[in-house]
Structure formats: C-alpha cells, structure tokens
Length: 99
Image (tube, rainbow, N blue to C red; front, top):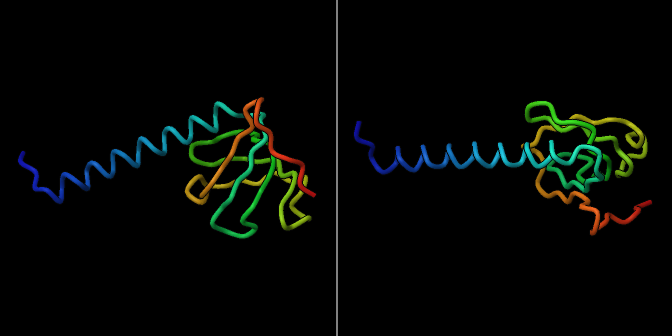
C-alpha cells in the first residue's frame, strides 16, 4: 500500500501522540505516593497534592492546595489531556508549602 505525504504525517502524528500518552501515563504510575504540582486547562488551574493512583489515562490526586479551599483534602480525578504543566517531587527538588 502506498501512502501519500499527508497520510504518512497523520500516521506519524498519531504514533507520536500514542507514545507521548504512554510515557506520561507511565511517569505518573511510577510516581504514585509523591507530591505533584499541576497546572491544568480547567478551573481551578493549579493543584498541589499527592498522586494517589492512575487508572488508564485518569490521574487521582489527593489535593493539598488549590484556589478553591473546599477541594483541599478531597481526591480529584483528572484526565491527563487537561494537564498542561507538571512537576513531581523527586526526593531532591521539593514543591514549597503553599498556603
């Protein structure tokens, strides 16, 4: 089967997105129990908490700090697609306490 240029780039983009999703999911699975700083596309935009678990492409976070104090102490389920920026504590670099 011969592919034209547009089909090939769509296929490559799909494969890259699948690899990215897989790597991101594995990073969060490997970090269960660690603190994380997240910037997300939806309100409340910023979350600091502990990674509780990963289920498929959903991240469960025990919220420590966010703009909505009512969410603190709760567990949020977030789809990985809404995560724009994240930092996971690695034992050397820490997320400061934010109040």
